[in-house]
Length: 126
Image (cartoon, rainbow, N blue to C red; front, top):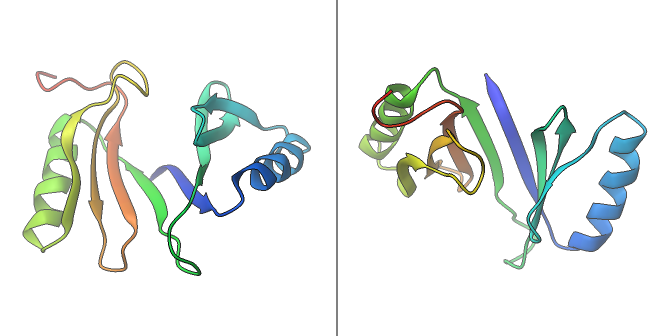
């Protein structure tokens, strides 16, 4: 069900040191580091992300990505969410900057969280 999730951190460097240490003792490590976000996990798959946050406190949106069976499911997720009045953050598309085959769509839920549906083997033709 959950593919990955992330939190926003007001002190990104302190949070990076914290998660490097506490997740390290559990056997997890940095799988991706894109400067303003770090993905932790194992075996090349980041499942938990921290991101830099410079927005208003104390509210910070959370990001949750749900695993989808394929491209059509990602598209249906986006269509259903927008049909309910959700803000579309990113329409369904390939995200090669994450990895080849990463196909996702992002919306804002009623509480302001960034919610995604993703499949990892997608192209619009699949």
